[in-house]
Image 1 (cartoon, rainbow, N blue to C red):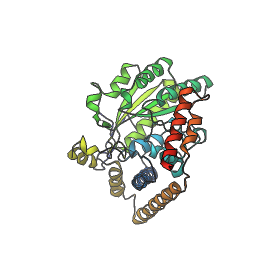
Image 2 (cartoon, helix red, strand yellow; image 1 turned 90 degrees about the horizontal axis):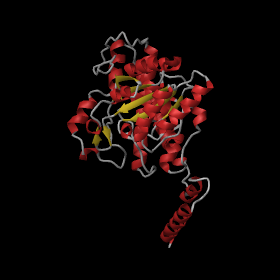
Image 3 (cartoon, one colour; image 1 turned 135 degrees about the vertical axis):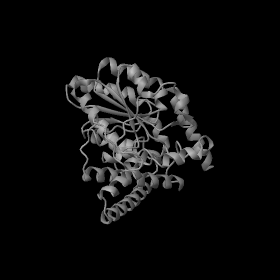
Image 4 (cartoon, helix red, strand yellow; image 1 turned 60 degrees about the vertical axis):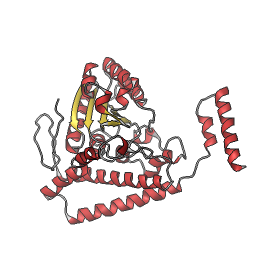
Length: 351
């Protein structure tokens, strides 16, 4: 299967009658703006981590088209289950910088109410959100509404047992679930081609899921494919999966050094397919982006970056000892002992 592409790396439109898209200046400018804001937020969060304001950060650099293109193609009332790198998608749902950063600053276990944004909290354990999404979709199915569930995961998570269990359970129960895989080519230091001997969308088909492959750096293709597949799921067509081929331009996290396991030439090759530059070329060629739009967006990005920094630094630091009270409903002897040992460790620094 060849990936669906409507906009090539040089910003030229291609035709695919199977995936119609009503292309307007307003749509392209909105998608471009959302990607630019997401990248600027991501850059600022990286700086905050390096300044010691965040304990850890996982960048979404290079994956903006996959996230913005997909989240903007579903309805606001469709519930979303992310993993831990879906910052661009979260921003599109209205989640604030403070709410996104609070977990990485260690102030709270999570930053937002999932019911408010129809966007679940981040899941750090690989693929753990996928059975949750399937169960939620089973509830939607029983409620008889036309809501669908959108679940994000990566190529590394696809190697977990929970992912394969989700493929099978979703297919056999025919729940309204749209699985969106951002194949960014690397599971930390393990390349996708050594994780599996068959492509991820083919594996999903083997479980009985409708599956599609899309150029994940082409935001127009991602938007068109997601919109069409989401409506099929919504109309009772059963669960489906979309594999978006994209690239993680940064390290797995701020504690990772990607130069130790991948060649610079690979990164350079993917930079030529940068999703933001691709759409920018189309806007310029069509005359849909003037100097005023550029200046206003640049200013908005800088204001957003400053807001991100301010909101982060205003987040209170958490007394980590209180987290032991929220692990289990009833404390166990082991948990009590771990709490005691932690208190002794903290006290030793004071001495």
